[in-house]
Length: 324
Image (cartoon, rainbow, N blue to C red):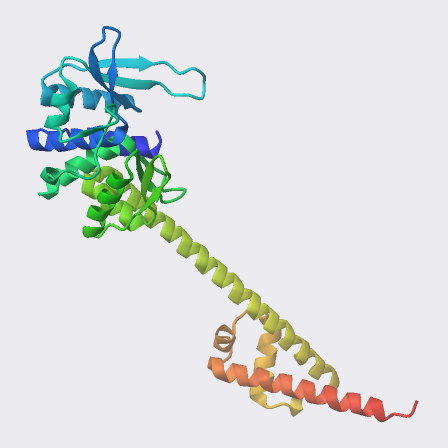
């Protein structure tokens, strides 16, 4: 099951039971789904509601029947090919469209498309009504990516003004969003995981919100582990490169000078480095008795490097002064 299916199924698990919240929920659905006033074969007007998921159609069927006192007619369109999904249309026949529009605080555009330019004040007065309105709107036109892949939650509607109005109300509640005007439609979207989580919590999709938060935490943990591993690999690579250079200088001195002329501490550190090329300076100091600090090990190996470089310079000068 896709994540958006889980979210909408989550929303349908708990039906609004109070009339004012049912009205807000159904109003949000009608205003954003692209519901239309259509004329049937018997020349009778009806309201058509397209629905994308079977459990949403069942939920809406029950809510409409309870709120309006009429029995909707469900029409199922089978898929035309293997790619398409079934489509569902709900028709309100035994009630005048004008009555539905009045009850739900709706309006018509070109006498056909049912919409709104803003959330009716009746549904903004308290948080529960606003939540119910948003729940209905999201059931109608909401979409969300699988949070395992990316964070994206959106609602699309024919009314740019309505999406902008919803966006302002969300902003006032601390939920950042943006509205994209597509000309004939508009999309309100959120891309920050925390904003999406707050939105899901606001509309009542609590189980989906918790699941998304679990996914987010696991992703952050994986990313942190990967960063730590990459950092460790980089540190090991740096240690090995430095160790190779140090060993090269130690071996050069062993071949070209008397090791006993070196300070005893330098001899101890050089011997430890030859035996433990993979260790960091701190770890190298811990292999010596008594243990040496990281800075002491560093100074000893720096002494080796300086002596080796000095010897190479003197050797090259002598070679340069030798008659050909």
